[in-house]
Image 1 (tube, rainbow, N blue to C red):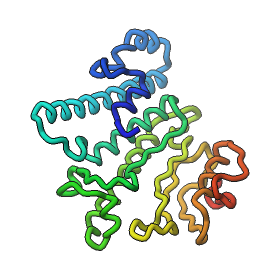
Image 2 (cartoon, rainbow, N blue to C red; image 1 turned 60 degrees about the horizontal axis):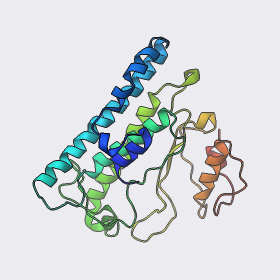
Image 3 (spheres, rainbow, N blue to C red; image 1 turned 180 degrees about the vertical axis):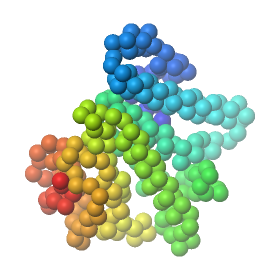
Image 4 (tube, one colour; image 1 turned 90 degrees about the vertical axis):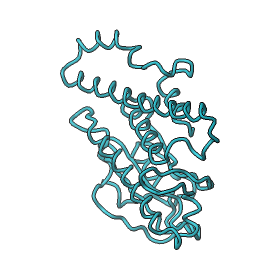
Length: 254
């Protein structure tokens, strides 16, 4: 699902004809009664959840307002209404919130479709719309801009990790402690489409199953699916193989 509003509606049960209503207002009556029965720490967590929903709703309403103004002005539809960097932040926040409240235990975010060549805006990062995909096929002409986008993608990932590390869960742990959150790509070089030396970061504790703070360099030819099989094992899913896997990556296991 590419549309952030549709993702929000699916996660939180709103409908398009009530999209401007604050979802938290619908539950405030019950919430107030519930809060009186909660401990201080649980009440704080409850308030944190409600505030995260309010923040996302405000951003969604601002996006809809931007689109309405564009339509009223009869401006030709641009390549993308929302700057790509803001879109990635918003979708990341939706992902973390859904994990936080248990709507889902698994999520993925494709930050750049590999066959998408439409130029997109990167507000405050690049001075004009660019196709990230096209840039990777001519890196010698776009090196500085590609570095800027690489820095942004990593900083957006770090931003979500920081947020997850601040969400407390049972036993003095955090959402990050109990999650496996991987950043990466299926290609090591966009120009040649080679898939060696993949740039991957695995964060989170996986409930104590992962060994943190290290760099693991796998031998040439190790399938990426070995990492996915390793993560399945960390989640307690016993499978002998996954896709073209040849085994697990022992170096990341605690």
